[in-house]
Image (cartoon, rainbow over all chains, first blue to last red):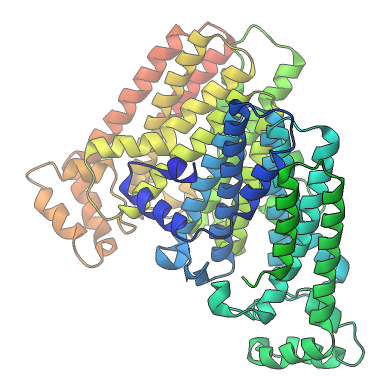
Length: 305
Length: 305
């Protein structure tokens, strides 16, 4: 359906659309929509069609934010290939993001439920506020509380909403919708903590983008925030961050994050939220999709890309 | 309502929002929504509230596209003050545009009619396709037919839709909605033709942005397309456009456009569409808003900014 929706007879747009489909990513959000849609009583084909539309629109919103984020972060690579802004231009990246937003909201409105449109608009709104906050405050040291707030806006709320949209589209009961939302919230937070960890730990080949970029970009994630609270490492980290070019010292910083237990602490926080997600899973009706949600939670923790 | 909607307790966003409100523009699109909403039988306060929400959301969509267009065009000024991208950064401009889109779709969904959301999404979609087309094909000579298609996508459809959204929000009859849409379509085309003329003729102080910029940016509008069809001027225009830096010869080009009758031809095309808009007006019910729509059509033609 994503391919079908991006199909166009305009040659220029076709080229960008094909490029966007090339680097497909994990499709985590539409997977959540589709899985959450398996907990209803209804399995009418009309509802399954609607579910597919919502899942497709959710992925389009995600694609749009990635294309725009790469402009914001001056990113060169995305998912192992040049970012849209690198391959084409910033102009094309701005426009193709807007184009995806528009297509997504057309699809959401076709799903025939205003609650779906309203939630989708709220997701984009919350993500923008989170990003504006991160962007305008960059280079300032955040508290751990501000970190959790930021990743909730960036990822937690989107994954929670993906689950809830799947539930709404298929008429799942309010109780189960709430549980699915909680599941999404926890794997969202865990996903982002792992993402921020992978910036320090991943093989850039597997990850499909450069690593140890956050500090240079003035974005301080959980490991840094934790290390800054340790009396033995605080001054050293502070010194690096306030140097004219902190990116030069990322390897030193990485070693401090290992020694101070900061990476371990972050990992334990991700594990904590996955445990909470699995707790919620156990309260869900025992349909086959529940097993998939459990496996998905384990993948979020174990992933190396 | 626009101020109320942009109100936020986040300091960073507040700063951008205030800046966006500073350069207010003509507010043409919300004016069309509000005027089109005066042709219904209903004047219930609920519907007037809904009309105001739709008008506000329409202006937000317009603001979002302007902020993003300035990134695409590397524009320095907008409405007489530095563009958001100049005042803040490209990153902030991308995000604040997305933020406005999100707020707009939240408002559209609150208006409680899926047809409204669907039309709004279609407007953004059509404008993006038009802009992508213009951007990726820039520097190619377009036919007059392609020009009309492009400005229909850029402005005609948006002004048509603004009128139709006002009609839908207040339960105007289908016949009147169609007439209002036709009115919006014609003043939209006239508006854009005049906009493209002002690039050649306006006082930059009054216009609030630089003039004679289109050619340098590889955007060829109606006067150029017309001049290229005149045997006496064709070669000269072609020579300038294919020179390494056409922007150096804009003053020569302007004189050719005067002498070849190209500017006059464009003006007559704008007049033609305003005449059609006034024809449609005469078929509308004789409510006071009809007079305002007639005056608005005359303003579109006479404006110098």
